[in-house]
Picture 1: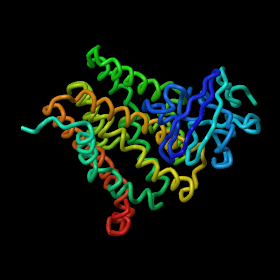
Picture 2 (picture 1 turned 60 degrees about the vertical axis):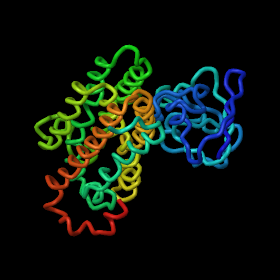
Picture 3 (picture 1 turned 90 degrees about the horizontal axis):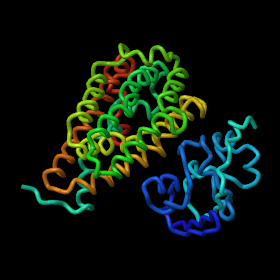
Picture 4 (picture 1 turned 135 degrees about the vertical axis):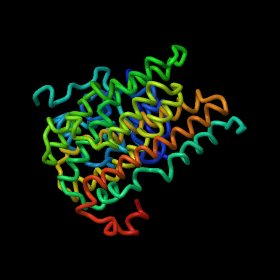
Length: 108
Length: 247
């Protein structure tokens, strides 16, 4: 089972999730990474779940159209929309204290 | 008199109540998954589906008002579900209308209740009836476990086909993608509420029965879509036994 590490506001949280899990779904049903993962709409629009991938990015699929639209240049900095990802390998993430502003909303 | 089931046994019984009545078995779903529907067929689906899922927050609103105060977590879940349907991101029905427009119909036609079939009106009425009249936990079992929890498995099959076979763009089929995430959360939390609060044998049996009826209602609705809009173009005999087995 994939091991997920989340860094947020100076704290580190670690847990296992079932193979092919969506972390926003897991948090939504009150299992790890709840309550440590911040998320919002679950539809790739609000960017509240956006996180920088520290380890394991090579196992993730290419960013989809929503990630490209909402993250824009942040993709090059390693950010991904966690609600758009199904996890099959270990992953280490960092969430900023302040959620990202969607690139589409910012006119980027 | 049946005995009180523990949560694991009760959950399995709920899943079995839905299984076998899944709307995935309907000829319309099979024809959709195998790429045989036309955009006109899909437009009729959207015009009907709007009147089933469009009022989902209304159904939950009636249910919310009748749910006792001490079911705090269940009430919060209903409220969050309503919020996510309507204003958490894009309004879900707007995404359905976007898909409908890509199929060649119009917003005006979609929102017009005269364009739904009598069977769709029946499903909508059943949802309102359950929300207004059933015990709140039984109503969660019906609307969320029996109906909403089926959605991810249906859309997970349909979304790739819409892109790969029907050649819709990503934006046109966003309605289907978002429900794979949101309804997975809603369905599972619905299970958690029902498992927690259906705490008598009688209540458990009522939940099982209404889950079965909910799944039947959705199957009825989906089956009617085939007969009302598709049967004249694709005979049932052309939806072969092999496809039925994998659906």
